[in-house]
Amino acid sequence: MAIETFRGDYYPFSNMYPLETWIEADCGEDVPTSEHAYMANRFSLYDDQLKVALARGSAADNFSAKHGVAAKERAYELIREGAALIDECDIARVALMKRVVQLKLENNEHIKELLEGTGDQLIYEGNSWGDRFWGVSPVGSCQGYNNLGQILMSLRQGFRED
Image (cartoon, rainbow, N blue to C red; front, top):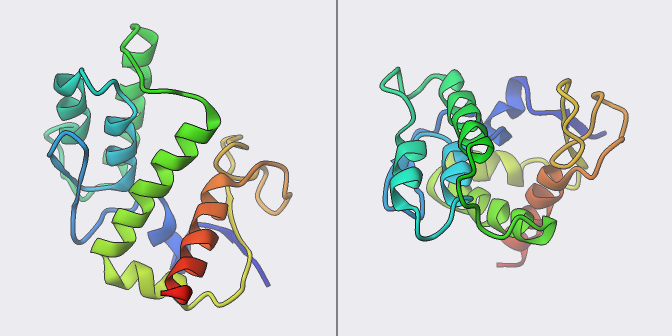
């Protein structure tokens, strides 16, 4: 049996999941979701002001799932406006996401335990918004690279070996 989507019991695997223990983005700001950390860390090392703005997000409820979406939307606005990004090749994006997800798991033990409890199940980030880089779309189709699912399975294996 496979995990096909990050809904219900597996929502904590989502980058939009509001973390109990916030994680630190590269700019030194603590952030409420791994989506905030990923988006903030994508920007040039020399553009700390943008990183801080993305890490802080809006003044709205920091534990709202919408907050992670707002950080993502703001990041894409900045990209369209020409903000400098770090290396955007696929290898760099996946390495950055793996670092963020590992930090999320190391600082939120309940999510790490949930991941370890999945045994050898395949993990797919199934979505309805057509993201075939980080997940698969449509849900249950296996159409996509599923990089986020691959990262989670890789980290799960690494925790077993430690």
